[in-house]
Length: 369
Image (spheres, rainbow, N blue to C red):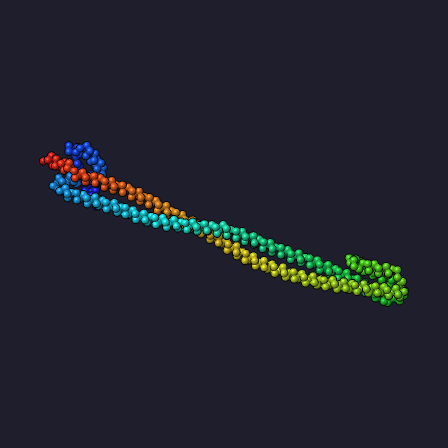
């Protein structure tokens, strides 16, 4: 309707009202000037003049113009209605977007919190635990190596002591054999026994337990009269007692060596078991570190996606606000234009119903004839 009226207005504008006619007062001329600024006002005045000049009835004119004004009011009401609908849509959309943005910001915060306060400390903790396991493995191997070296040293020492004991026992057995055969020992035999005693002393030099006993035995052997059967018996008894002590000592050395070997073997088993446990723990920890690294990568990817989603939502919200602001500007401009046209239309209608307008039309008709 509005477009059709504008076209009609363009056609009727060629019959513009002569505001300089004598029937118009200066006040009327000012009113005309204001009305002419409005397309609808100018159209109504020209339409009114055309209607009356062709013999139309004023009441019919008023009715037609009132319909035009009603249509303008309806169109304005529709503008208000459409803007209200747009406002409702805008409010719902803003509410939805703001809620989604809030939810997305919470997801971003939670993802960052999970990354900063769970995954990174877990990564550092796993790395420290793996480093400790590797140090435990190294220490375990060092301990095993040290224990093996020490066991070898202890065993070599044992073998040396066994050799010393066996050498001393052999010398004692030789001396006992010589002494048991003596009835009237010769100087050579006596010297042989004394030489064996010296040999025994040297063999057992590191064993302080036997030194006093050997020293006494040497003194007896040096001072004794081997021809005296009592002295000879005393020497034999001393040699036998020394032999018993050496055999007991050798047996104790052998028992101690067996116990040490047993303890060493048990220690080796324990260390190897610990080493196997450490190795299994390394495998588990390595898997945990790999899972943590994957989770970190996934979380960083998620954070990127969440930030992109948040940017999209903020962009949608900004676009909606901009679009609504533009719609509001259009609405305000349209309402202002409609109000301007309606106000001019009412003024034009009031002017048409004044007697001076009818007089003006009549004067125009007389002038034409």
